[in-house]
Image (cartoon, rainbow, N blue to C red; front, top):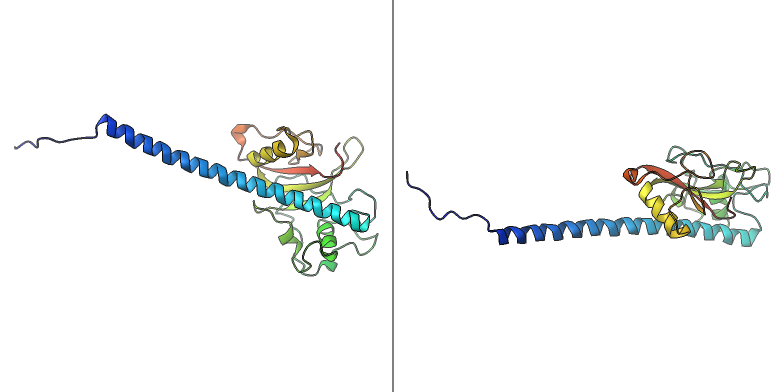
Length: 218
């Protein structure tokens, strides 16, 4: 049998070049994913701050918070202590007067805040609450108050359905520290309403909800 001569494989230099190229590609992919994640977190933060700005603009106009029908200064609607809020979404009513604060006796609900702002033209009157309250991660913002914390309720905006890594990023961006139990940003996924520790970094993909104290802090 005739032998095939001069068969060549990759040299060490060629293999090194291939590995370097693979490393560059992987680094670019990871960097690209990091930029996408950072962009999503910044968009959530921007939307959260936008809702807060609308709340205070409404307060300047009306002398009360939107959805605070009984003028109590603190909402009677308490968003549920859950990680995911899609089970009880805001309304799909095209007409905001279907669920706004018609009188001081109107029951405060998941919808009264957004509907009040629509009636006052802070948001488009024709855009349903379910669209206005939806964020980048496909879940919802909800405006209400906490259960009693040392005998006091506090007004909050809850952001449901966030991966833990994103909630931590927002905590650092707004409070300067990754602490789910202190500051304006807290872990609202389970009792107590004053906040719990964020999941460990090994569980960063775990879904959580996040409360934002826009009025006063506990």
